[in-house]
Structure formats: C-alpha cells, structure tokens
Image (cartoon, rainbow, N blue to C red; front, side):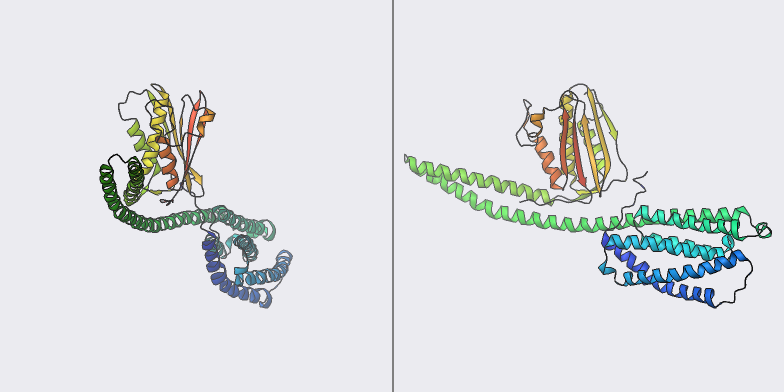
Length: 440
C-alpha cells in the first residue's frame, strides 16, 4: 500500500517552477494586499481596551507583525533573485515562511474570535498553497499538519486564556471537531491530488520517451539492415571468385594457402555481417510498456507448465505499483526463462524456487530469483556470465551470457549470490522507462 500511494518528487527544475509560480508570482501580490489590510487593522483602527488580556495580546501582535514585515521583506528579495539560490535552500525557505505565515494567521484568528473566527478558511488556503509549493511528500504533509496544529493551538489559547466564563457557555465541541477534521481531510486530499498529478506526469513522460525511443530503434534497424545488405553481396562475390582461383591454382601450395587465408577472412567478415543483420532484426522489434510481474509470471509458466512433474515449488512475492519497463517482451522473457531453467536443472526432481519483485528506489525495480539448490563454487561465480562457459554435459554456455547481455541492454544489472549446498540467488535491477542502449 505504501508503494501504491507513494509520490516521487519531480526534478529540481520542476520544483523551482512550482516555487516560482506559487511563492513569487501568486503569494507576493496576495501578501502585499494582506499586509496592507493588517496595517490598517492593527495601527489605524479604533481599538478600545475591553480587557487586559486582549489588549496585551493586541500589543504583542503589533510587535510580531513588525517582525513579520522584516522577515517577508527578506524572503521577497530571495524570491525575486531565486536564480542565485540552490533548490534545497529555496525549499527550506518556503517551508519556514509557510509556518511563519501560519503563526501570524493563528494570532489574528485568536484576536478575531478563536474557533469562531472567519479566518479559519484561510488555513485551508494555506494547505493548498503548501501542496503546490512543496511537492516532496514528507515535507508537504508535515507542513500541512503543522498548520492544523497551529490553528488548534490558537483556538485553545482563546478558550483557556482570553475567554470569560460567560463567553465559554456559548462554545460547543461539535464545530471545533468538525473544523479539525476538515483540516486533516484537506491535508489528505492535497496529498492524494499530488499523487494523481505525479502519476499523470510520469505517464506523459513515459509516453513521450516510448515514442522517441521507438523511432530511434526503427531508424537504427533500417540503417543496420542497409549496411549489412550492401556489404554481404560483395562478400559473396569475393568468396566465389576466390574459390574459383583455388580450383585453378593446381599444385601451387603458396597460392592455395593465400586463397585459404582470404576465404577464412571472408567467412569471418560474413559472420560479422550476419550478426549485424540479426541486430537489425533485433532493434526492429516493437517496444512495449511491460509490467515486470506479468512477464515474470509468463516465464514461470513457460518453464513450469501446468501439470508439470518436476516436483519443484515456486513461491511468488510480487510487488505492486512498480515502474513500467520499455523493452521488447522477448528480450526480458528470455532473461527470466534462462534463470528459471538453470534453477530447475540444478534442483532436479525436488526443491523450491522463490521469485520476488520490489521497488528499488529512484524509479527502479528489483527482481530476485533464488533456488535452494547445490549452489555455485566461489571460483565459478566470476565466470558464469562468460559465453560458452558451462559445467553441464549438454550445456552450450550461452544461457547466462544472454541473461547478462539482455539485462545490460536495457540499462539494468545482474549479480549472483551463492553458497555451496544452500542456495543460488540472482539479483536483477532494471530502471523504469528504459529502452535499448546502443553499444559499439
């Protein structure tokens, strides 16, 4: 559930844009009007002295308001020159000034009736302002909860200190609880709205990257296919011509050796071109937005079809709300199929395989596949990903090499942990929204 309702903060550029919009372009004009109203209210209104407590509070507010003017003047200068400050500094400044504004508003709330003051609605506005200016979830929730607590403290102070016994008789508990609940609900709604906006932002970014990468892959595939076609035909002609020369060489051993050398090099070049054509077909494949849990489940059913008699138990522990992977399904499926087949062969007729997916932070996800098999010797672990390295009698030694290649093709990584006689664990990490990395 924590992953489902988690919110990934936007990058620093987006955070600065939000601070600029809310704090500089919106709040500065609003505060200018707000402070002008307070100046008239605090210094030019006709105030009497109804009681000592409220008069003392009023004089205290006048001095505190003067302090607020100085602090806000400094913050205004920083916001107007925000390009000179780091994003971290701006975040701290915004958090501090939001709490400072909440305290000023709380004092005015107490002065204008406490829980009965119409200024309560401005606290809800402060929470909305915090949600826009503070896209980092923990900071936003903390700020909005602090705003709620400050309001409740102001109302409580009004009841305990400033009200007479006669005034307290008209105060009921229900409106106070309703307002407190409304502040908490606003905190939750602001965060929930941010989660939705954040997910929509990521979906838009994924769609844009998907289209851009697919175009790059198609262009690269066409280029590779064209190069392979243009080079392969001349190589075929050269090979045939050299073969004819070899037939005409007769008993000339020197010429035969030269012909043999040329044909070997032509064959080597032909193999390179064949691989290039295979790469062209590879990148021409269609990218898809993959749910890693679905791909992993399909691989499990491929290796352990329904009704199998391997006697092996597969335990699944799938994470939720994992980032999608932009990849060709066949590539990623081949990774899991090879690992699971190795685990099945290592376990023989009995054993257990554990499969787990989880969020890895920084928009990555992890896949862990562990078998309770015989394990791998420490000296063998470093060589298991090398092509043609195998300890099986009928093995080709390409399975784990393909695992490493296909994983790194999409910017991921794979490591092995093993202990003889106990287990072998494959740890794979994939970045969300990845696509093929072209390698020389």
